[in-house]
Image (cartoon, rainbow, N blue to C red; front, side, top):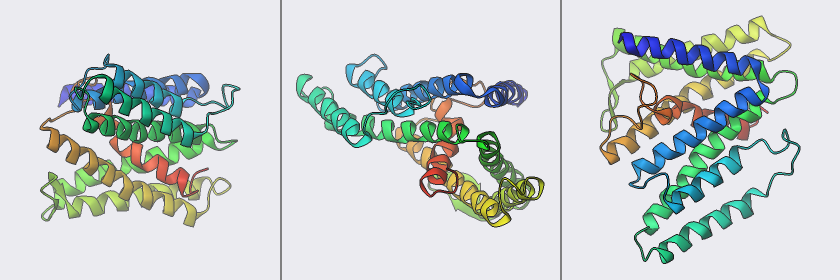
Length: 263
């Protein structure tokens, strides 16, 4: 537990510092996390990071996360980019005579979408004009408060299992506690920064962040259960890998961006 707390404090402090600095400092961190997260995903699916198909997926992930406009470049059309990546991955199944299988190709493409769009949305929110920093803090605060609320409410009042086949320790009471705390934090943002966001808008973000964040956690739990592993990696002692720590972020941020709640 001490190691977990120490790692959390050090990693959290560094993350928030780079978030405050913004620009390429924050973008560089997210690009690195995306690359490490994709390599964890590759390893979960039985390939090494240096495998040509895995390298193809890594490059595709970076292409999605890369802030093209911020870097002064024209972003490639995503539909054609994803089609070419799909084709290259399928070609590898032929070149390797099915040593790289169709399942490998499908999973690698899934990882590109899951990780690439997740971290790309985080960068998009931080690069928002004027309120990018506040919007990012609001989203993360709601996600983290949901995690904290679910943990402590679950420990104190948890009786009814939420989804034992996927995550046996989570409870409905803890889930509700996480949603409530996320809504409270969102409401505080609206009260303290009314020029930034209205109460209704903030509460919508709080609700989506909590519910989608908990689903993101369950999605990663389901995947790890299928693969028979406890953690996706060992980057953060006591916390696991990037995908263990960012599972909620990867679902929440795209939903907030794609629904227009944060743009």
